[in-house]
Amino acid sequence: MVSEGYTATLVAATLAISRSSLYYRKKPRGSRADRTYDEQIVMACGEKLAYGYRRVAWWLWRKKGLRVNGKRVLRVMRERGLLVRSRRLRARRKKEWGRVEAAEPNQIWQSDMTKIWAGPAVGWTYLVSVIDCCTREIVGWNLSQRCRTEDALAAVEQGVLARLPEGSREASLTLTTDNGTQFTSSRFLETLGQLGITHRRTAYHHPE
Image: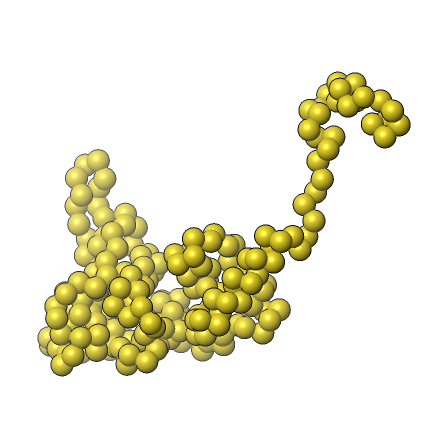
C-alpha cells in the first residue's frame, strides 16, 4: 500500500500496527554476525581438539564472552567434520581403601560432595570440592542447592582452568572419586575422557 502512494501513517492506522512494522526486513541467513560466530567455533575447535560441542560452547562463553547455542555449535562442527568421537563408557564400581597420595602436584586429584546446611533461608546445599593430593590445596569447588552431574563437572573444570590452563591431556592426571551417581554418570565419564583425565573410583564415602 505504501508503494502505491498511501502514506505510512495512514497504512499503519488502517492495519492497526506501528509504522516501524512497515519497514521491517527479516534478517537474512548467513549474516556477518552468523559468519563471525561460525569462525569463532572453528577457531575454538582448532585450539581445543578434544572438546565436544557442549564444551566448545562452554569455552566460547567462559573465554570469549560469546553465548552461542549448543545446537549451532553442533551443526557447525558436524558440517566441518570437527566432531570428536567418544566412546560410551560405563562405570565399573570399585572398592579401594586408604589415603590417596601423590608425589607431584597435578598428578592425582581427589573429589567429593558434601551436604551443608546453609540456614533456613537457603536450606541444604551441596559442596563439591577438588583437592590436589600432593599439595592438599583445593583446586576447584562448586556450591549448589542441587546434587547434579554438572555441579561435579563445574568443580573439575574450574580446577583444570586454574591449574592446567594449557590443557590436561598431556598432564597424566588422575581424578579419584567415590561411586556416587554424579561421578559415575556417562556424562561425567565422557567429559573426563575428553579432558584426558583418568578416573579412579573408591568405595562410597571414600575419599572424604
